[in-house]
Length: 630
Image 1 (cartoon, rainbow, N blue to C red):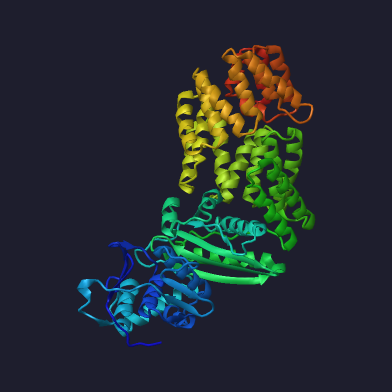
Image 2 (image 1 turned 90 degrees about the vertical axis):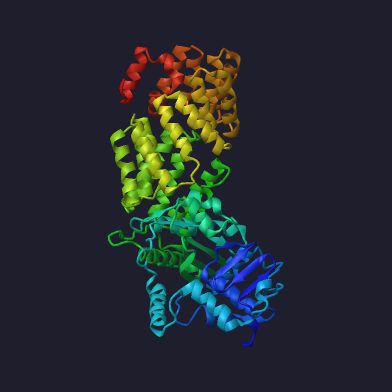
């Protein structure tokens, strides 16, 4: 490759301008933020416009031999970032052309700003060297300084980069969804499962805050830049990568980026046989944990805990189970998850996480009232106790046991103990904080509940469902004005979340605004596909506003459903109460008590639908038997 090109120090192509002296890429005069390697890559390509710059030449210039980083992944990532910044594409390139297995070529038209044309300079010695001075080192070019820089760079890639004086430690991190490079939709569960595994394991890395899975999943396939994502999630670092599963081989590449500087701190590539997929996942996760821990301040590091299986088939089934928990068809998704978790347990009867996943399935089936409460509790409790017998440090299992103790066993003290234990084991576990917040709201500690929700907001600043959590606090407070305000905000952010409409309707009914409440209940019923809580709320509002025929129609429909499936007797009781049928209401409340329905302890304290019964001695006796304050 020629080294005698005479080119100006500032070059223009299209609407872009490269300024070597300032180390900047500008668009229309506005500076664009570009990472170190992509900028130097651009310099090399522009230097040799129209010529092929080979991968070997790029390696020699940009990734010296003593740089411990996966070159293929680093180069591909640099090219991708550069193209994203330029708005270019590999399929229809305007500026950067890929020559398969050879290298890259800059094909865009180059011009020089008018004021620069009379001052040609030697490009290699001025343009590229200038960019390195301004963009990478910015130190005096003495031999001692070069040795110092090389020593620092070596420590970055050998030991993991540690923050320098005045730099900020990585105290928060987001693991973006790993890209499925196989393009096989059947393999989406694997890339999603790997993302989950990394999040779960990194959550244990000392005091580092990890963005929740629900937050990072909304960035799947996003065009946003990493610094932009990091700002939205309020994190110091971002992990991104990809999974390629082809035949009997699996390859995973990942990199750790410091958000503030958009600087790559670490990158790695790992490849294994499919039969050793568990070893591959563990190796990647632990490598990243090691790099993150190298960023921690002294005293922040915590012991690493991993609860998994050595059976590849069991682990594969487990990943599929977790994947289907996010299905848009909730009931079908839970059923599929249940089957896969049971398959994982069949292949490895000592797989603690699979038992915890199975317990969650029963908990959710009971929460949606798709199975009788006795069944949900019997099987869910057995599964979660087995999970904790195998691994007492499994935080998610303690959270599930907390819910079961609260809503099924009616053991309030154990419920709070288990929910807090879950958070102690994993301070980043959003579901644990959420469960505790709802428990505190239910138990009358609204301020403590709001404080817990604030922790969720800090852990996960883009989580829209947090507004729904706030609505739950005001629901249990019976503060209907605040419930309306909070629910209106929740509806604005979550218009497709039926629970937001439901809480808004409850607030409006509690405030006597039946004309507004009934349409919101109707939306909740439609969006939830006839959830019995939403149906009972609508029927009660109909009855309370004088539309008894419509309330009766819903009651009759629920009675018909009892012939083919489970219908909560508590919900039937609330409709009878709204219609003034007190004897029927108490008959169904007693049925709910006898089957230990989770609706009994959860709703009796705050539910406006049973207000007409509260003065009756039978209601006070029910509170006493349940163990609630009278």
